Amino acid sequence: MPSITPELLRRYDVPGPRYTSYPTADRFVEAFGADDYIVALQQHKILAASKAQPLSVYVHIPFCASLCYYCACNKIITKHHERAAEYLRYLERELDLHLAYLEPGQTVSQLHLGGGTPTFLSDEELASLMAMLRQRLVLAADGEFSIEVDPRTVTVERLQVLWDLGFNRLSFGVQDFDPAVQKAVHREQPAEQVFALMQAAREMGFRSINADLIYGLPMQTPASFARTLEQVAALRPDRIALYGYAHLPERFKPQRRINRTDLPAAVDKLQMLAMALEGFMQAGYVYVGMDHFALPDDALAVAKSQGRLHRNFQGYSTQPDCDLIALGVSSIGRVGASYSQNAKTLEEYYDLIDQGLIPVVRGLALERDDLLRRAAIMAIMCQGSLSFEAMNSAWLMDCQQYFAAELEQLRAQEAEGLVVIDSEGLHVTELGWFFVRGVALVFDRYLQADRNRERFSRII
Image (cartoon, rainbow, N blue to C red; front, side):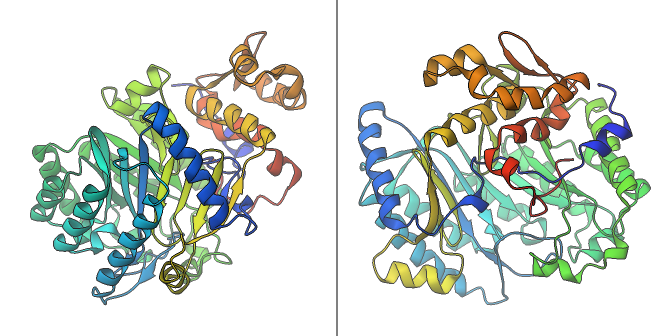
């Protein structure tokens, strides 16, 4: 493992985007609406007819039975499970609105159910949703079909239902195993429960089982987090997503229930990160990039070693870079050279669909500069290098001249051993992989012009 000093961690502990897209979602505008999105769908139809291009589909399930205080997702807290049935009817109508502009029988290579809590839906409702999707789309035989799971909402029997419905990947929301931390964030779940569920999932045949962790939560200490890390190493999920908690109560109302004085000091938070980096790599995990780890034989680690990593709104992916159709309230999609986002409230989402309209309310049509910078940022985030020759050939440009200011700015990072810049391109070093967001954000034209970065999570 490269030597990561506390000074280096501290220097790069700054806010910055996660780059699941470029430009980032905060740059979307209401001037981009459903009509613009339909144009993008029509262009996709033309390309798909000639290239048999598969789709990625994201379905947002916003409902949660209880509130997690750290949460920054778009969700609806309710005990009324009957609300889900109405929502599913609108999802079906929304998909039909999309299909009016797409080639029939579209193949889907990646399906992801996120939230909220997708397992808020009953077994029957999940079966109805999957049947609806299969009636209208072709789920590829070798596709990735994943669902986010709150361990408090499932049993071993429910996991079997998910397997029978065709899901082959799971993501468990663990966050922390310490009882005091769980109580402080209103998410209490015994470690034994998670261990039993993950063991059962393995025996059923689920692959690439992920566990989400968060460091920087209230009541966490380096000592308590060390115990959680030991438990996770023993749990041995195929993938680990390790996120730093961003306390932004002015933006996210649930976080106002967290007492700021209960949060760990910055020095303790950095120590927790350093412990996690060292601990997971000593346990045999590959550092995929940013905040993702995977076992060496996992598809994500293999894709990284072979230079086949991609990135979309679900994070790192092994799937080819394909258009993403997003269904459900507040969901974000990408089609061609555009991004789009659905209405953020159920009332507006339902109203637009009742009018027979695709419920897109904001988005962005990318300009050439956006596309160039997106290509550069994604090459850095996924392959850890920016080839000047590849950019020049693909975009008919002089990459070194176009990004001269950015390359000069990166000389400071080169001096610290994070990158190497030579005649062939920009290369992120082994040490630099731990700070790859800090490398990528140099190419973000919007961020460089706007120094108000506090709306983003910190890159460490």
